[in-house]
Length: 397
Ligand code: HGY
Ligand code: MN
Ligand code: MN
Image (cartoon, rainbow, N blue to C red):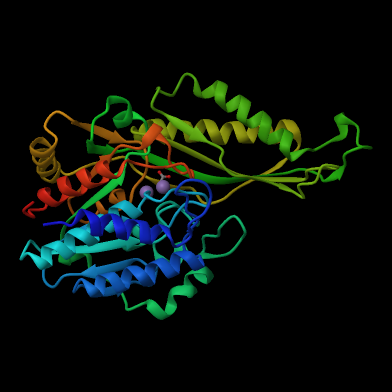
């Protein structure tokens, strides 16, 4: 039987690593001091639960049960400003279920906390490397917004690394997560059984113009990199109108101007462009529009244009058998309060679908807020999710 109090206490303890901001905020980006301290604590909890701790070169942390087992988990790194549940919920639920399974002669369950799911360096980097979607060499060459290469950042966990972890020992993967959107909160349902996860593309762009004096440079003689970003964004929004659906999303979430001073015409702008959709063809059409628009703006405004590597994950469907197990469990625990739904957020489950059957279940996010300090879920809803997952994996309630 799972222990809800122990589960909630562990969840709050994990939040204490990097606790910040209002409410239950967390700052625990991949390989930060808080992230590594949290992983050391998690490793101790895994050991105490009788699991064998393994850490691969990326810093993905596993708590292994002997023999073939079902893998449960998520990630424990956070966004630069994140909430206490994004990723943490799935990891702590996995820990509690694996621990309860060992205490009660339950099914074999292993636990994982993937590294850099939140993309300090890429898109779900830890599970991308573990699943073979990206090589360690390719990943090592990725840099964060400050220019730090992953090869250097991951050295902070070097003393924890035990070696590669063989995916063949796992029969499947289930990830519990907060929804991070408004659907369940609005419908007042308690559980979402995920049918599929949308695809994503993510790319860095640079416009290079001419840095100059903001007082003396006449407007027609400026090669202002910020104006180029602004024009690009406006044109893109217009051109997407014929291509997108109400579910398609796109974001310029990071902009870095050089030298970023009030009295200097910015000579360089580096910015992120990310777009997501459930249809791979649409992602492709959007990419074409993005590249053409950036090229056009560069020519019109006298900018040098360069791109970073194109990162991405394809849309994927969840395994029918594992979905059924979650549905049966939801039906028996919250009979009229669950639904099947698409995930608009990305998850490690996407990468793992290359290796094994995967499934996901969601619990509501209050006001649909996530990737923000305000992210939260009622504790009763967290416990409902834990019980639905526990029963789905074959643990008696
Ligand atoms: O951005 C995402 O969807 C994920 O939370 N990293
Ligand atoms: Mn997450
Ligand atoms: Mn996230």
